[in-house]
Image 1 (tube, helix red, strand yellow):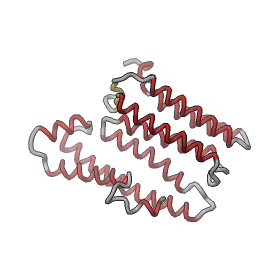
Image 2: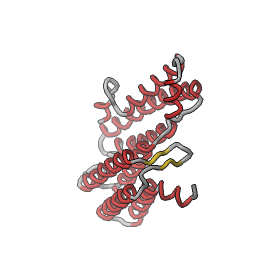
Image 3: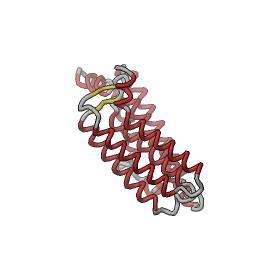
Image 4: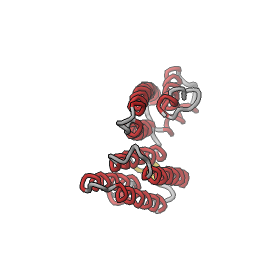
Length: 228
């Protein structure tokens, strides 16, 4: 695969990163840039949606870590649509007015993590994508410096998220040690080709528990009210 082909497949994420950098640059260069930054972010998200629609129906890239399929493209479009509406809502929000460009950049970078998460075909890439999204959300949660509750929520979110990340990574080490791979296909073959070793089962359980904490899935959602 040539670099041009790789760039075409990674175009949605690349456009999002460039848009975030442009928004930050405009925010630093102009004193009152809230409307301009929102417009740039919205146009960038529309361009990302177009790039997703232009992706091939089936492709694997990134050393087998990322996959393109109609299902992944559908969920990526949903993530982009949600980010678009978030940008529109942020335009009227009071907590982001003083540093609007930074706020929008965090939203865009968090969306990059979501796009990678949807396309991931490998546990390590899933972990990296979740962490990229999580780091952006930690900062967004604590963004309103004038509100003590925002700082408290951001700190609690960071502590719970870091604990969940450590739990997930520990489980991934067990999975890799017993399955010999972090690719979802190889792990699936290992599970179907005989008895499952106790350490592999423990690693899978720990990984799923960590991911459940990350997405606040019941019954691992009790931390969510403290953060949100």
